[in-house]
Image (cartoon, rainbow, N blue to C red; front, side, top):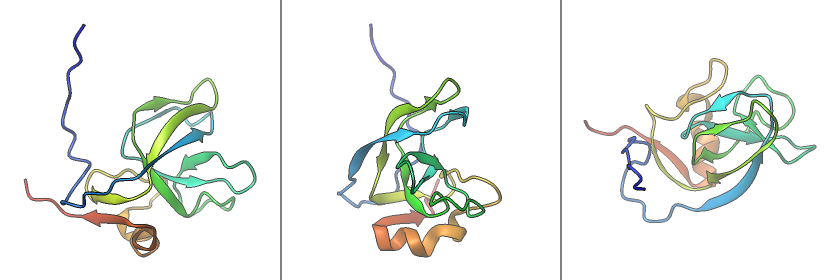
Length: 118
């Protein structure tokens, strides 16, 4: 059985270091796509979709989800990119947020949002 790799234009630039970390994504958020920005809930340490209107710690960027996951039935193991250069048009945010909402904080973590040329 072979696997087909589809290029999704998430990674951008030529930064060689892309650091990954295993995480637990909190359940009840439905299907979450690779490239979704996540924040970390202070009390549980679980990840939530990043939204500046949250008030539990997950309003601050922690990383970028590295795989498509389904949290419908509960907490889900996955991984996030902690550092790297990401296509600003392909990173997904919660609420009305966009890359500009979190750009300054992300830069301090080694996460960079960049435009890419088609």
